[in-house]
Length: 401
Ligand code: GLC
Image (cartoon, rainbow, N blue to C red; front, side):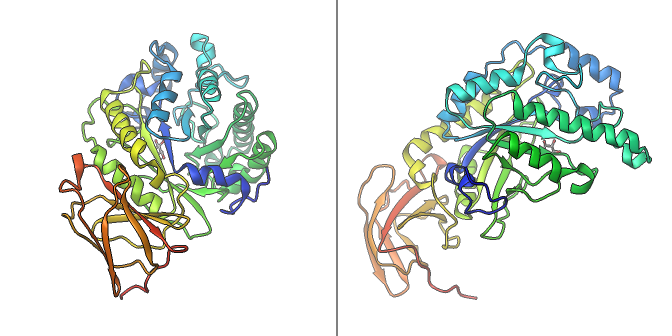
């Protein structure tokens, strides 16, 4: 497939732009400690002490088929999983270290995930952290140790090569933790050229300190320029890796509204789950995934395949667009009449997306009045979607200053 790096119109990007919604998975030996993925660093664990935890880690309830099924049932169309986080422990077999799950428990955890994804036609993304709190050569350049730095770059490229060679098709390479060096310091151009040669059509994020295919705002929503692909990654509570003490869960309604808002601005949402040490997902995540899935069954049409919307936010929420359809994502209660002040096109029909029920509407001057919304438009705290069939591509009135 033709790849024009960083070009949103490139053929290799189109499936991803259509997918709109993916699952992020933060999982590793740190999950066992249940205090998030930064635990080793923040609590300053001596390497040997943390190593003992990592080497004893044996996730007995790990069932990647179940993860993939849950992601798909939630309407997620790709998945990105941590293969190695900043702690340096590899969830895959490597010839370049013996600090990996094959060496410790004889299981290539990422091979099992890859198999589950390939079986289910789920595009597989590998998260790879360039940081490494375990490797003695990490950060060598900052100590003036050029030989150590050269070894670390070779090590990094060796692991990335393995990830791109041993697991069949890899759809996405999601770098993280590159803060120690700039792109040149990481030899990122060289490394990513290797990645693209091994995995034609792969999508690479912007965190090897060179722009590559897409931007990755974290825990917030920020649209890139219209010619640039972007993806917000976000947690369901406040933590990426499993944190037993974090009970600040976002509501399903909030998560769905976030998805709509991101999509209306042309982005994807990569929503995180942090499985526990044994491999099982926390009940709170499972519940949210199920509820999102139920909503997506009825409203997926207003999410998948949408592109950046010319409509700005309204008092009711956000608008997603696809072809000549506009979807009003009513994320806030509005009562039974909805007044929309943006739509310039002639409106051919207005329907409740979930049921197909036709709604009464009137266009007068700059305004579109939609009447007879169900009394509980804000049903179960989840957004209601009104589909507008427009005459022609969506057009908006010039904005008021
Ligand atoms: C932050 C966290 C890191 C996490 C990443 C996901 O950078 O520090 O642990 O993996 O976000 O985007």
